[in-house]
Structures are given as structure tokens and as C-alpha cells.
Image 1 (tube, rainbow, N blue to C red):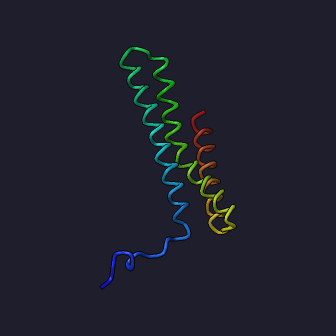
Image 2 (cartoon, one colour):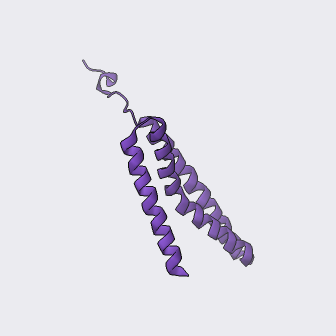
Image 3 (cartoon, rainbow, N blue to C red):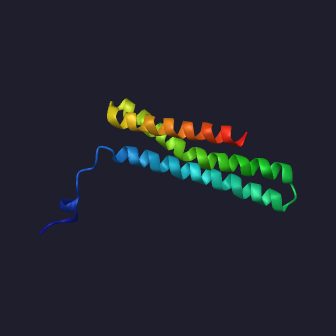
Length: 108
């Protein structure tokens, strides 16, 4: 008779990385949600200047969260000498940077 433990697979090499990145996304999302909620609350209470700053910071935190995920993953891969995945992270970061720069230049 097989027990549940015999059905378990060996943990993946990247399982700890996935946990770190999941925690990073969770924390970043929670911080962004709190900032946005407080900003909307301040807006409803008539504190427009403070509210707009909080909402802006919340949106920046929300946009920065996936960027931090890619950066963190890249650093973990470099530390583990997993050069192929580190290169992929570098390519993604470069693509994000170009997109941000082009978007910023297009707005001005």
C-alpha cells in the first residue's frame, strides 16, 4: 500500500526561488493596495493633495513590483551561477527599461 509520502516528488531546484518571488509579489501588491486605499480614503475626506500623492506612490509601487521580481530572480540566478536564466532576466530588464524610456519620451 502506497502512502502519501511515496507519491511526493522531490522538491524542485527552483522551489525556494519561487517562494521568494511569490512573497515579493505578495508584499509589493499589499503595499500598493494599502497606499491606494489610503489615497482614495484621503480623497473622499477632501485631502486632495495628499490623496493624489498616495495614489501616485501606490501606482508606482504596483508597477515596480514585477520589475523587482525580475531583478530579484536575476540576482538569485547569478548567485546560483545559472547564467542562462540570469541572461533571460537581463534581457527582460532591458526590454522594460527601453519601454519605460520610450514611454517617458513619448509623454514629453
